[in-house]
Image 1 (cartoon, rainbow, N blue to C red):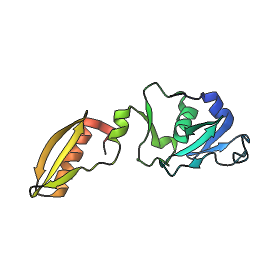
Image 2: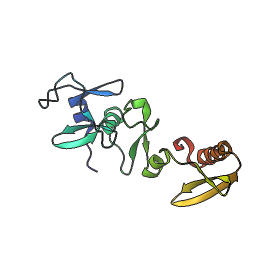
Image 3: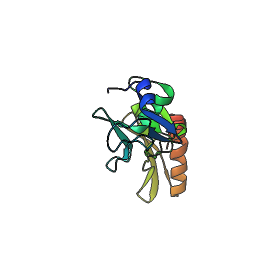
Image 4: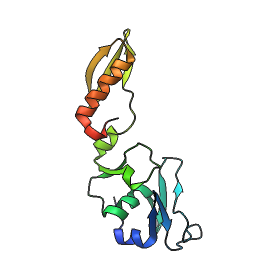
Length: 153
């Protein structure tokens, strides 16, 4: 994925409280002092166009604060809200870690019991069968925390 340089991001934008503001007028709708970009309803992310290329604002905020995003890494929204672009809500993640931080169906009802299972590296792992849904969810959460650390949901 083509990236943008930190110097250009800082030249074009100012960051305040999770929002990028235009430092310069770049286009009729991109006026100096106004918030940059727009909310993209199709994917739930905020994005902005720079020189004809669309960028997720979360990626630009990361670059603004930390420099280039390393090869093979993505920006993960810790609270799972893709529109919350505060720097303290952003972290580097592999694609797999980013997937771990997405809401999951933690258990389902089978044969009169609640079954908990988790997917690890493409394979379903059986955690257990439980009389109560709450127990199945607790077992899932414990296993996910053990396997995925801070990236579990």
